[in-house]
Image (cartoon, rainbow, N blue to C red):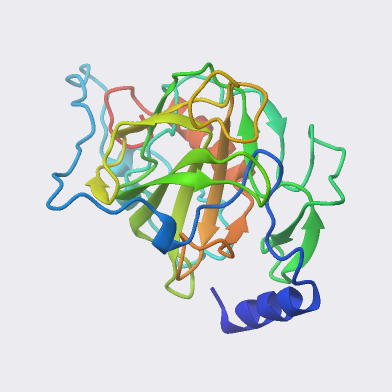
Length: 271
């Protein structure tokens, strides 16, 4: 992230130390690196499931389809999204992205939570929003969650806000996707109930990394009262720390599902 953005961030944190980067009731950002479960030594990569043979007359060649607009703030350096081999985080091509129950910066799509501020870095101003740092999508408990792109998956077991129930979250730090300042872009899946990749393990795009939870009966549901996945995009040179900067994932996810529906199902990118 830009130095000016980081300077604004820390200036805001000093002006409001009691509220800097507190995440909403069912969506804290990943814990500090020292609190992440230790990586498993020499863990093998997890690959995406093999795709079926491509039907005659359909092609997966990048030149045969228009590129997807990434729609993530501060990533104007990304000119070829096909090289990222983006994959749906849940569901399959043709599916809707899911019913949203909480949008970025808001509760139930419109009512702002005044007591839980997050930092909006989508405008470049790092202004403080009072609300949610991600989007919450209704998913049945146990829904498979996949790597959006290739990267390293971290299992976080103490994902929470101060004083709230601890939950589980999977954080995927992308291999190739970086913001304009070279900081890693990470994807956080909150309220997972189990992990299918080991902590610190490298995974391919589309690899199964976890299963969703959020139901009060699920282990690791944290501060949540319904089955859902909390999905956020983090841009930071320390993406696992509690003050990592989040950007609005709403349009990125919408674009990804629209793009996946237009690509042959046998293609690996966004399939």
